[in-house]
Length: 375
Image 1 (tube, helix red, strand yellow):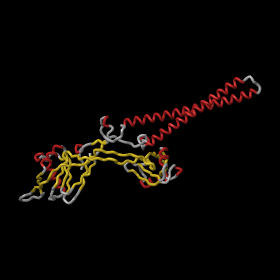
Image 2 (cartoon, rainbow, N blue to C red; image 1 turned 60 degrees about the vertical axis):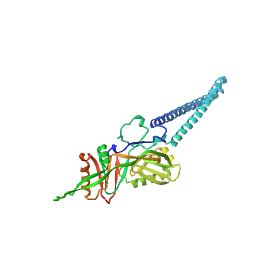
Image 3 (cartoon, helix red, strand yellow; image 1 turned 90 degrees about the vertical axis):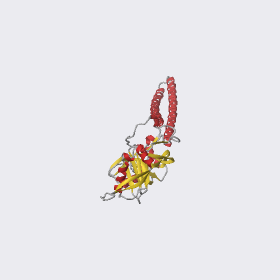
Image 4 (cartoon, helix red, strand yellow; image 1 turned 135 degrees about the vertical axis):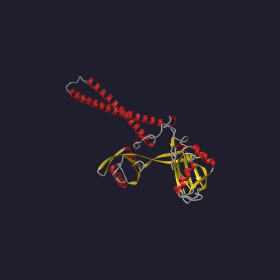
């Protein structure tokens, strides 16, 4: 049975014990590291070009030196010029040595930055698989951006001889609960000469459910698993697709190894592959993309780290449904459909303290059911 958003309390979690940095700060930090990496790569390219220019100058000087030495056999007055050229050669070699050391230092720093980005889950966010999203929510205040909004999906067990009734207005539900016991008239649906209707008494009580008040989730990157995305969406059965992927990634020439397990994620259309040996997943993730033949077509699949998440702390608190009432003690005197109609007719009458009914679910005696509340 569905109910409107007033039936539940939206709760924010991760107020305490959550991430220290806001998503906005994290994004700024990511952009800063990206700019630093780009600057380092550009500087490395500049140094490489300067190194090539220096080497070219050295070759030119060496050629000039050889030419001078040949000329010295015929012209001895060139000693000053030779010394000048030798000095230039020495300075050029010194400059080349300095540039080489600077290049090695920058390459080492760049490697440390890349290593740090793989060890830090936040820095790994740009490497995660791309997924198209459609925003259908409401715009919230800027100060609420660091909060996690939970949407309840509550399973509420119902015993036989009971019903759940949801009114359009919360004040109607409150009036029904305050009366506690209600006398409902039931028609037999038959034309009797004497008494053609009877009455039954039902008890009304509030509906209390447990909602999460605090939630903590721990994330960890799997060292032997990869997440494969960009898979073909149609025409290939799931089991055949998994076989194709396992066959491809089991070959060492493709950068893979023996596959321990495989799993198709129905909610996102991606596949998790776990290898027997360590180090295989890291090498594939570093490649980023792989061209995989599936059927008669080659698909460019994206390889991303596989993040495992588990709930480390969950706290619940009772919450009362504002517009929903539990009716109990309903005798089995009418079939299911007439009983449901009789209850709805009775509780929608304002003269009996009722009001407009939004939804009603009834479970006859001897049976059980589960009502699902969702926003």
